[in-house]
Image (tube, rainbow over the protein chains, first blue to last red):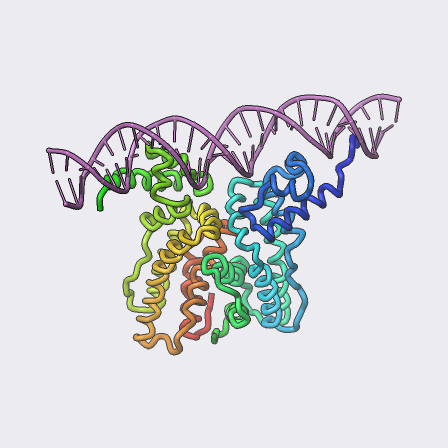
Length: 191
Length: 191
DNA sequence: CTCTTTCGCTACAACCTGTAGCGTTAGGAG
DNA sequence: CTCCTAACGCTACAGGTTGTAGCGAAAGAG
């Protein structure tokens, strides 16, 4: 390919600047103008790489989101507790405030939405794997509706953080894990 | 109070214009400039009444959100189904897309956030009342964590609509109602 | 060495926001 | 009926963001 190659350092600086601004000011206050300024670059450099603020932020999140563990604890309940805990770390971060703004933008940005969904999908894999393991172990009889379970695990914490703006306490997360466990195994849930 | 009284018709026109724009274009595309234009008024008229776009939209929503029924069906499960169904109507509306943008703005708008929370709080009352009735009926032994139950009922549908962007089917809603019923009564949930 | 693409930089039109200021007007207070 | 005050109609401004365009200069690929 002829032509001057892209400067990888410039890209790195822009991503770092975006991440920094995302943490300190939040998504809404994050501006491509400010990103460029913080990266000591030009606004046009940002537009040359990302077609929108949402695209940029999705890339930034994919790079910095704390991972969801996928280790086998030996029991379904243990796995669920691990997954719930790791998801809660992300939902407890200060920048989740901005997640609302991001998902709002995704509605007019099909490409960014696709990238975002791919990322979200990947973060749901540990939960699905835990269910597969539990099924092989015999802890689960009938195969569950994975989509519903996903909503069930992440939905309440999303609701609590975004609308209720309350913290996710260990007790709360434990209740969530036991709830999912009860639903998956068909046993009574005692909270 | 001396002085020229406010024009109630002007207020009505502005609210109607905002509601119209909110439905057709969504929250993000809604602009105080456009609201004023659509209402055949001046931008300053909007600023004189609401201090921000979020405040205006909260007022609009309070006026137009479909209500949540609070009637006694005779059984906890029936009440839960009714409440879940009514909540789902709101979460299925097209403008929920804009809810993300609104809640994003609420973060820098304490007054609007307060008004929004008051509204959200009110919409949670039918659920709480249903639990009270079920407790008096003897369907519920130990008083549940109302906050958790609220997250449990509304969280999954919020998650499904906002992140998954999937529809809320009758089966899905029924599963949600039975889930809440199982948790409240301490019985096994069979989905 | 040449050619192509990126880069640095400036500039532009378009839009929205929030505030200010001005006469004008309507209606309550007296 | 006459004040007097606040709302109204309207214009204007400063500040910010967006997206795009264009240019010469630089850096590698071929």
